[in-house]
Image (cartoon, rainbow, N blue to C red):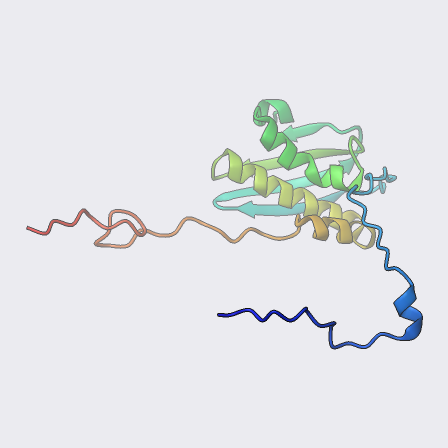
Length: 170
């Protein structure tokens, strides 16, 4: 395709005479606003979270930030720092670190799935406590969405869900 040698024309939108002389300035901020610490609402909440095959039944009670997951604390149940971060994220987003105690029963799935299930359960429990105040921030962070991805079933005639047996031409 050949390009013309003409200079580019202005956009088809017309400008008013007042707009032409004023420079357009936009201020863009790259900093995210710091999470403000909120006052904990003094009532308990409960929620259920699921991820892959894992199910978490969660109870969130006003307290000092203690964790009991299947009778163990957070650091012993999830020794991986990434999983600990995933689980504590709803509190961090809302600025409620250390203001609620968490009691959870987890079963099924693996460690990563259980961490995702626990995060959803905590978000739903916090929503039960104060929906009007907490919902926008939790929704924006994506903590209220159940991840629908599960393992695809194996099909007969195939080795796995999609892997075909080795093909031999002769």
